[in-house]
Length: 144
Image (tube, rainbow, N blue to C red; front, top):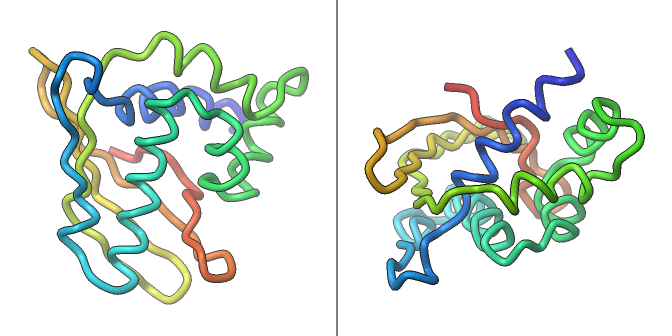
């Protein structure tokens, strides 16, 4: 189903935003890992950082895998990936995002990610990442 990535994308992007403007700091959960697990967690941290800065181009060009970007474009043929992120980034509440667990199997990894919004229940999602060259890219968003 082509629309599925766009339904989940706002949730993930919203979860990736931090409350830095109000003095709440984000913990860099990538520091809790080593080696390739750290590289996977760092990709999630990069998503959080780019989302908090509204850097849609970086998210689409450097953080999401090409197949996921293609799915986003297919779901909305009149918009670019960056255009599809505009409203979710603008409308997102402030959240904290923490990588809790990373599992790697060859060139595929999963990251168990916990998001926490002020006054709301914590939500746990699993992101799938794919190794592209030396970098890890997010290839699937937010499977609870």
